[in-house]
Image (cartoon, rainbow, N blue to C red):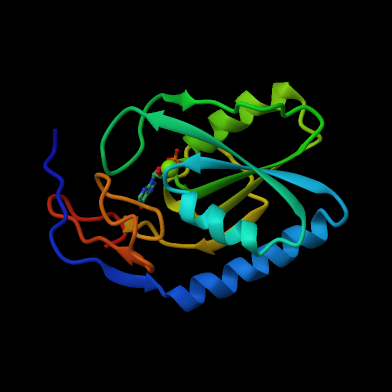
Length: 186
Ligand code: IMP
Ligand code: MG
């Protein structure tokens, strides 16, 4: 297994202000799209927790929360291989407007798996909101209805996102320079 560790301090990619402004825009868009209806925000633990908190408060809609936890087996730095659910949706999904809330769309494996798991439960609508989209490494076609930022293939931390469970509480989204083989995006 190749050696991977954080080699330098994280550097800011997206500031608190940039994140806040964009999430207000996403919230306004979702509120227009679901005007007069209620939504079930289904967040993917743990990374999407802070995005959920801010997105939810930017909605002028009747909203409920549910959480799933997905695990993908493989390297620490990139999700690889099989996805499984460590915690699935507790409440009913049928007939509801479900918005999957995820931190990063990377290979697409996680969201592809979650969409395939949820669709048979007959939601009224099933939409995807991601804070970050890294299209460079996509392996599974996933349509994200709401995208915060499209970013190059950097490894990012902060604002809920981690490396080895660290850095989730950074208020900005930061690039984590890694030791070992160079980051494909440089
Ligand atoms: P996917 O299944 O490859 O689309 O991966 C999505 C998951 O991989 C995200 O929910 C994150 O947990 C994790 N991930 C992908 N890229 C990064 C990153 O740059 N930083 C932190 N986690 C990441
Ligand atoms: Mg995640």
